[in-house]
Image (cartoon, rainbow, N blue to C red; front, side, top):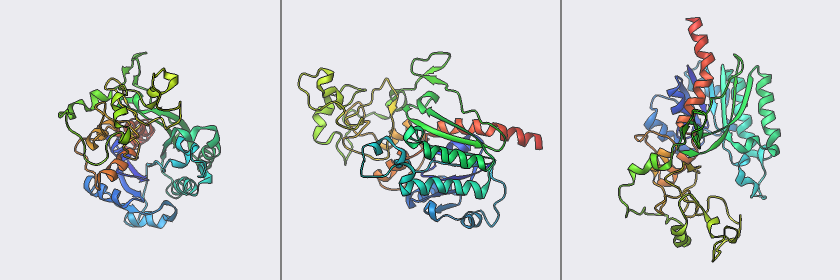
Length: 349
């Protein structure tokens, strides 16, 4: 089954697609560093480095050797800032489709859907896309896809519910020309109830990588000027530990006065919180040993293979991983999408 990948980043979504039986025949992204990561890991896949608003149908045809041929899946995760929770705090910036970048990326995805007419599509974004304030954007996506003949399913999936050692809620909009797609059913839960396995913890995922207790990463210093406070935060907690509402005898911060991730520390007994795209010295999650996580650790928390190669500086590598769809979650969603296609292929054979 042939897939086109948009907003491909470093290829987390595509690793999952490949495991589910798809083959990416074209990838695209605005970031040049991603093209090098793709060259190192997917050397046979054509890669277009271009803004989505500048991408044309002819670009796609030429990149595929002059023939569009049949495409089974169009997949991609348009950049999420216009729909993210953090945008609620940025009153100086427009939200959703009022943001020119938000309109360009969503409209670009839908344009390619129209040009290519794949059997199915997968659009991934932050949970905020489903919020009421963004209903116009989600309704526009669904309406336009339905007008092209797709039966559309929308759902929010938590990566931790599917064996990913990370609490990462994302909206998936999937559609098919072959009928309704059922999104995958959770295989894990916090308490292991109703026949599911328990969530995979950060400790299970990365403890074997932390062999030097005295190690301290060069560059950003975890916690910055608040490092001494970070050391006092219990594993699994954040700056709210130092608030009057929590009963701290010497409060340092007001309740909900900072981002949730401020001085956020992993617990080895719980999944990680969402790995974000920016490596910071005061925004976690941090390791329970009071240090910034390492690239090999966030790869594990995102379920990337250990031997996956990343181009660029540490910050560029972090951004690529933080922006990615966890490959394990991508695989399970892609398998759900592929079931009607597999039946069709077998019938044709």
